[in-house]
Length: 422
Image (cartoon, rainbow, N blue to C red):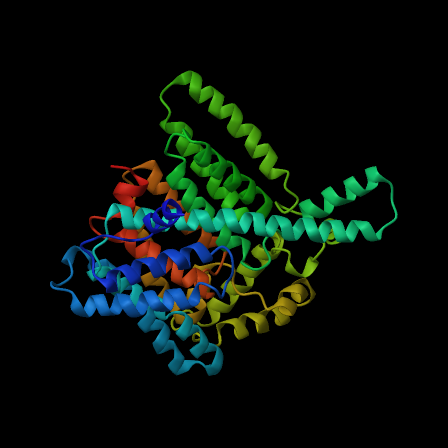
């Protein structure tokens, strides 16, 4: 019992030279990262605690921030532009709601200007995120299996037909209903970027990597598939041994075929609707996403300088769907956002907002070009924003407001010691 308690305590932040404020800050982040893949609401109070104690640590900080880290101030500036857009928005309730959710873009980057992190404390963020991903995988797996079995048992069919129907339902169902597959897939890719550069020399490490790949496959997120494809190429490119490289190429091609065969990848909507348990929660199709981008660009062309304000952007986009006719009937019904954070930002804040967002990611690309591991992480973040409006939901906002500032710091522990492993 004592060994178990001692082991659990070792998982958390327990630096003997740290203050109570620092310990609560980091441990709140650890618990929040564990809960991120499990539920959209559970992490919120722990992120709130981290903000409160992080602010207390900032106030008590002995020295000014490192000037080279002033790029982190782009996030508070981005938040300020969002706040200003309230002045010319009509839908104030939705606008203020998104402003409140976006507060972490203002607070966490400022906190990380003054909080001194070490390799162990940052590495544990990835560890807790991994624990949460493994837990959420089995939670979602049990939920989907239960739904499949209860559905199949209603029908009086032969055993073989039950197996066939069960497999078809399992493969076509949405694997993660509580947390968006886009967010979970991004979490998986970032954890994989850390674990794939290590040797799989323990049963736990091999088990985790296999679970993460299976999870990523079952989620069927297209953006994650594209990112994983590029990450695979970068990983193979680093291998100098020709025999190992040939083996990896063969495995890579076989894996690509398996992933592309997932029904959610370039899926036929009509075919999927007949075989899914819950058609309302299925991810947006490739064709629908292209149509969404087209409508968003058309709306931007009508107000390119200032956008429509943080509260009206979605309403304007839905109105554009209705204006464009029957092809966009499903878009209007589900009130799709832009499904592209860069287009979403342009709709909300105009050219100033999109300039700041592009500046952050241009700087990040320049800073993380040093190694393939780092660049793979940049690609995961960038492609995620290309395919989803990640800075609309709280989970996406708070995740980016923590991970990206940690990557952008001049002597980034996360970038050099964790990802690049220098």
